[in-house]
Image 1 (tube, rainbow, N blue to C red):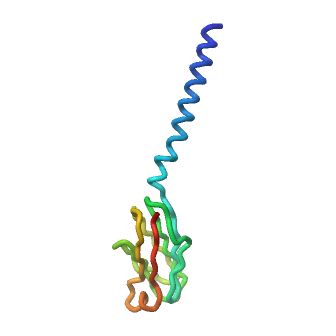
Image 2 (cartoon, rainbow, N blue to C red):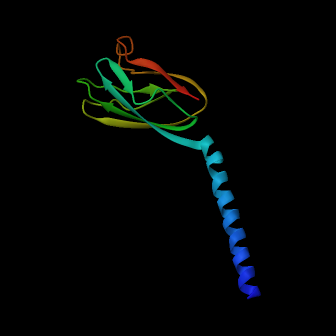
Image 3 (tube, rainbow, N blue to C red):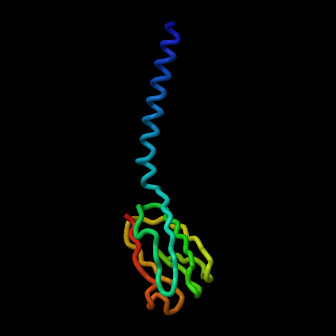
Length: 120
């Protein structure tokens, strides 16, 4: 009887310790979030599924719904040139700040394919 009571107490302690450890993980993980952003391009406009994200990895998926080729450049990195109907993905680890984005096809940024993405 004493052994089973001790075993039950040890099991209870183990459950509490594991639960406390599980609660601690999200606080650590918050600094390393992965956020997905869909970037839809048309002539001559970008529409982002969100204008900001927490710091960490941001995966930008460019979807070209336009009639001409476009790309997406942010933080010194760019997707490949994407044909109409195509997609490309760009994964970046971004720190807190504001990041300008553009389409680098000549004339497209001047026509409106540019903006600012915020990392908080």
